[in-house]
Length: 466
Image 1 (spheres, rainbow, N blue to C red):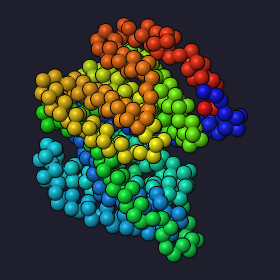
Image 2: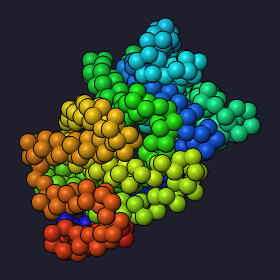
Image 3: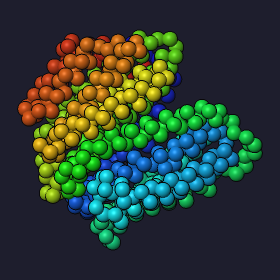
Image 4: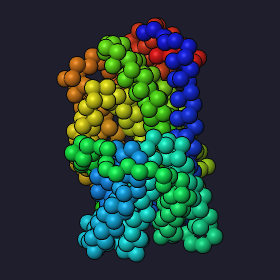
């Protein structure tokens, strides 16, 4: 592993700073929103909000058909973008109307008793879909600063406006959903004038067939992934109640911090690994994937152990006594997000091979295993069973991704498997006592990180390139 020129290293550092700031703000607002909404709503109403918001997240790719959003990614002019926005919005209105007619059946299926909140959530698909389409249009036009502006407008209104509405007007799930709709609508209103009207392109410049295939893939993958994210909450609601959904969700959101940090690393890492891979140095790209995956697991072991130690005071401090039960599942869910962040790192290899469709296999497998395990575990162990089912499912899709990567030529480091095997140990009750020595052993002994890898990571942190 050798470094790049100073110019390349500077570009790496610049892209990292830009991405960290942008995504950091958005994800920080998400965490603030979870804490604020949970405290203002209480476990029962917060659980109802999570169930309805999760349904919106699952249905949104279908409500916008995903195809319009995909076409927007291929558009090269504001004129094309405006045309796709209109067709996407029309499709969103039509599909949302059909879903509203089916809302009684959805309520029965998901055991959501408050039909008013359910109908309001489905209706929010129209502004939410338009917000998402607008965001995609700027991505297609390579106007990334405008895309970030759209996203920041949405999260600011949704988070701050929602918390203010819950505090001053009504502490109900319905008010939280209305704030979500307001965030989408205001984001769209603020950025529509930013679209230029001076373009004269007469026909689409993208390949319709390619865009449609990409769109169908996007719908399936996005809906599957969102269903995988929320399936444990729906099974909890089916067997227990929405209050337990709220308690579980409090721990779940707080435990996503390792995944957030890992996502930042992966998103910045991918373009530079792509450059190395396209230059024909596959072994070097694989070495970096192995190295960062091991580093993520070792850092994750420290995070899991810390979560086990501070779980009760941190839950009580942030969420209040009502959510004290979340401390039981907080370390387990932290372990899950560590494993899932590492899975995302391994999955970078499929992006290098231009085979992101492998994500459909792992997502479908994860959804199926999570559903089955949650159905088996929750009736017996409650939300603790849900946490262990989610963690086990995450471990299984990590193993599946590793097996698929090997079939496509990836050479996993044996030390990566050693680090992965240590994660479940730290997730157990005695993990709080062994996590520091275990992480140090994995970092300094040859069974974990090589000395050359430690030096490489230190060099990259100091600003060196890949």
